[in-house]
Length: 461
Length: 122
Image 1 (cartoon, chains in turn green, blue):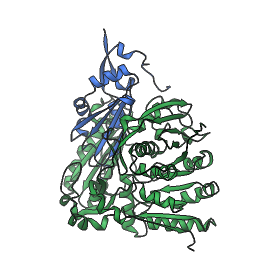
Image 2 (cartoon, rainbow over the protein chains, first blue to last red):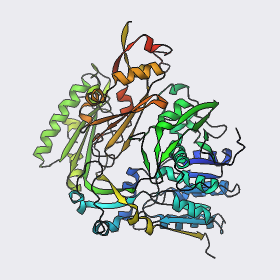
Image 3 (cartoon, rainbow over the protein chains, first blue to last red):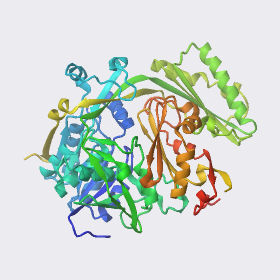
Image 4 (cartoon, each protein chain N blue to C red):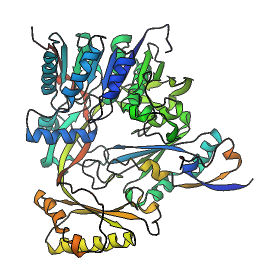
C-alpha cells in the first residue's frame, strides 16, 4: 500500500444499505489497515421501512441487523482499535445504542464506549417548526405541506459531521446516529484526525467526495459497473472501499488486499455521479462540493487518487424529509409461456380490468407491466416477436388496505378460466403501505441547538 | 467525413440513481472527441422523449467535463418515489441501461481510439 509522508487517516466503508452483508466490513477490518469504519444504513426508503417497524413496536425503529453487525465486528475491531460510526440508529438511535451496549456486555467488553447522537428527529415538531417560521413546503414542487400534513408518519433533518466529531473527541468507540448525511459519517473522522476546521471548504468538500464514493459499498469498487463488468473479478467477495485521506485533502481510494472487485477511474467515476443532481453544487450539511473540480487518476492497480476538490460555504438550510402515508398497494403476477405469451398477458390484463370493476374495487392508480418485455425500458424497447415467456405484473394503489388485500384474490380464477399455459409468475405479495417522501428545507437554527451527543460505557460506571 | 449511427451502449458507461421522485442518469464518454459528440447529440429534449411516459416533469442536463460526463436529472420520474412506487423497478436502477438504447450520429474521427462492439462472452 502506498504511504504518504504527511499526516493522514485511513477509513473503510462497512455497509451500503440496510440489508447489506457484514462480510465486506469484516474484510475491511481484517485487511484494510483502517482506523475507522463507517456504515451507511439509511436510504430514503429505509426510513420508511423503519417507520413501519416503529408503528408495530415503539422499541424498534433502528436497523434490525445492527446487533448482528456488532457481534461480528467488535471482536475484530476492538483489538485493532478500529472505531465504528453508523447511522443505523434510524429513527430510534437511543434504542440502537442500548442494543449495542447489550452486545458489548455479551462479548465481555464492559468498557466499550458507545455514543449516541439525537436531535435529527422532527416527527413530533412539525407544528412547532411551522409556528417558528419554517414553511416545510416541498422543495422539488413548491407544494404546501397542507397537501399531506394529516398523513405524516415521520420527519428527519439531515445532520452534518459536527456531532459525530464531538462523539469521537469524547472517546467513543462506537458512534450511533440517526439521519446524519451519508457522506458526513466519513467526513467526521477526517475532521477529528486531521484537525480540519469546519469552514475549510475545500478540505470538507474533499471529505464529502470521498464519503460519497464510499457510502454505497462496492458501487465504486466494481459493483454495478457498466463497462466490461464480465472481467471484474470475484464480485462474490467484492472489496468495500478504503480511503487514505491526507491532511491536504488529497486521497487515495482502494480496497482491502485479497478481495474481489476493481478500483479504477472507470469504476470510481460512475459512483461520483450516482444520485447527484447539479454536480457543481453537491449539497451536504457541511459544505457545497463542486464535483466538476474532482481529478481522478489511476496511480497503481486498484488505487485511484482523488485530488483537486473545491468547495463553497455550507448551505444556510438543512435538508429535511418527511414521510407520509399514500395508500396501499396490491400486486398480481401471472406468468405465460410461448406461444403468444405477450398476447395472453395483454388479454388477461383486460380481463382483470373488468373483474376489478365488477368486484367494486376502486384503484387510485394502476401500473401494468409485462416483465420480460417492457418493465424496465417501457416504450423505448421494441416488443420481441414471440418471447419464450412473459410475466404479467399489475400493481394497483388503493385508499384502503382491505382493497389492496382483495385485489390479488380476484385474479385467482384465471388460473383455470383464463388464457392457456400459465407458468412461472411471481410470488403473491402481501398488501403494503405506500409512503411518499416529502423533501424540504429547514433553517439550521431550528434543528442544531437540539442536537445532543452522549457517551455511555457498556456497563455504566 | 463519413458519419455513422451508434448506440450509446457501444460507446458509453452509464449509471442512474434516485432522490425522492427525481432520478439522475449519467453517461460517460471514453474520449474527448466522443464527449464533444455527446454534447452535440444527447440533449435534454432527446432524453426526455426517449424516456417517454416514465418522466412526468422536465429534464435538466449538466456537463461534467472532468470525467467526460453528462448528468441528466429527470423530474417526477419515479412514480412518486421508491417507497410509494408501483413499478417493479422502484429505484430507477435500470434507467442507466435505458439511456444506453439511445442512438447518436458520430463522425469516424470522433470514434478514433474507441473499441466498438465489446460484449460479455456468450
